[in-house]
Length: 249
Image 1 (cartoon, rainbow, N blue to C red):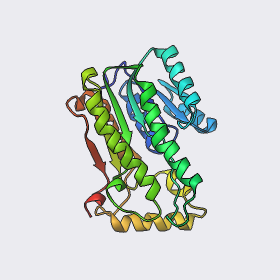
Image 2 (cartoon, one colour):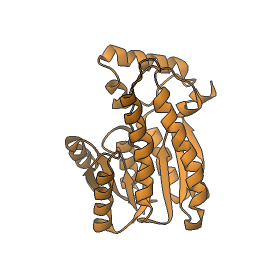
Image 3 (tube, helix red, strand yellow):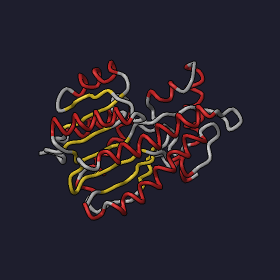
């Protein structure tokens, strides 16, 4: 029997990268996993790759209507939730000088407002003893040019996690954050117009990380599984760094 046998999980942004790797781990341990994403083709590909105990739901966490539809489907299909992995996020590299109101609003609407209401709307479905995992980034404790708005949103999530962990103790619901460093996922390439630019960022990351390499999505997924399962039954309000020592430099 797996560690999550009979459990129901939701992973936002679960059709690729860290979210998809986490979905694989949770399915392997017996959970039924709902994964969300904005693109239907990516969701269908993820469903095919996972093969069983998975439901793909198209939607944008910045849309309250989409969140209502997603949670309505979960309630109708399986009646409740045990695990929420708030992973969906938006990143756009912009300097302070070049930032626009549109950049600021989109970044905060997705990463902060979207995650806030992802958790808020999950509460009626979350069973006692459940687990909420917010995916942030180790960069929230550092200053990184071009990532100012993105990192500020992740710092906000870390603050929310502390408060929510304190609020939800009566229901034995654990709230934790994981803070990955640079991870080899498609999001790196999506930040640039050319492969050369993306590879340049990878090289800069490798030079800065004490372990000398980028992390793998499976390494983050292993941490998500730990926090989703009873292995972390006495852990709440914690922030788990998975960054090869980057936050130490």
